[in-house]
Length: 218
Image (cartoon, rainbow, N blue to C red; front, side, top):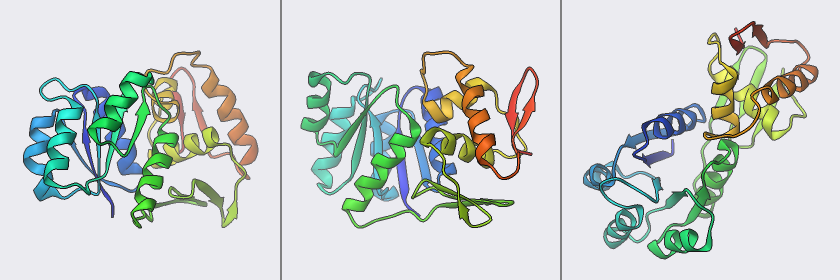
């Protein structure tokens, strides 16, 4: 199993991101600042490090520089609050292999991780099975009794998230965080439209609406 180290001082972002990666089949370690991560990373030997550009105790570029000094082969994906040329150059100059701008879609993040790992000949065989549903988290394909479902990326994300949390009622806000990405700015009712489309594509309706609360797959 591929191990990922997440270094992010925002607890909400860190926990949500780490949970999503675990549900996607990755082994995840999370740290609130660069100093803690630097102390353990060499012994931890993660396959990939996801680090925020701005850290409270040690900046992302400084952390990357120190890690690169000790191991030039370490794989690093940097999170940035801006997609400006200045911020991207800071990320790549520091030694990041790739960069993703907040707020981001977790589906896009997974794709970036897969591409980085594939360059190095590594892959994750994460697969989720629940009832008649089988989800290949690597290929982003969902199957119903072995037959592929023709889902959009958003519909796949919703099915994956609700299946991963089966038995748990998820609010629109929680689904937005998981599928659209944290800091999503827009109407929460967009979730309802995509749930409706997902239901139409499932041979059986397994998505339950809990009035006034949210949705769940029991």
